Each structure stands twice: as structure tokens, then as C-alpha cells.
Amino acid sequence: MDLVRRPASVLAAFALGIAALVLLVGAPLAVAAVAWSAARDAFAGGRPIAAVVAVAVLSAAWVTGLCLAGAASAWRRVALATAVAAPEAAPEPAAARRPEAVAG
Image (cartoon, rainbow, N blue to C red; front, side, top):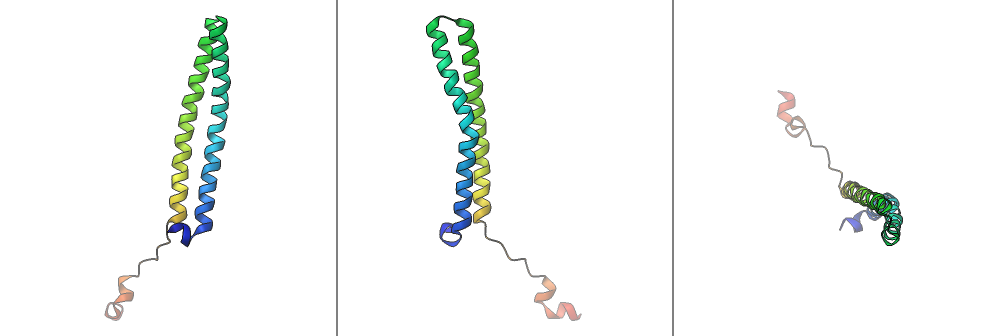
């Protein structure tokens, strides 16, 4: 229903959230892909030190990607909640509702 009432703000928040997710998670995934290739080559070539280093880099990149994905998802949720939150009217003071309170 919010998409019908406020399409521009909801779609903008959605698009920004997806863009942030792609940008934040893209770099660690690229590093993890390179580290995976290096680890496979090191294991196939019989180089144990290089294999350990490649697996450590792969693990660090993977954990970093997971942390950034969580942060981006949380930010996206807040952005969408803010976009659909209806502005609430300020409550009317009690004195304004009761004329006798102002006069007395």
C-alpha cells in the first residue's frame, strides 16, 4: 500500500538500498574469487604456505563480505522504514481542546 501512496520515496529507498548492497558486497566477493583461484592453484601446485595464505585471505574476504552485507541490509531496512513512515500530526494541546481551561 505504501508503494501506491508514496511511489517515489519507496522506489528511491529501494534502489539506493540495492545499490549500497551491491557496492559494499561487490569488492569482498571479487577478492574472495581471486583468493579462491589462488588457493586452488596453490593446492594443485603443492605450495602449502601459499595455500594457507590464500585460504586466510579468502576467509577474511568472506567474513568481511558477510559483515558488510548485514550492515547494508540493516541500512536498507531503516531507509525503507523511513520512506514509508507517515508523518504524524502533532498532538493538540489539552488547553486548546478545552476552552474553559484557557479562561480559568
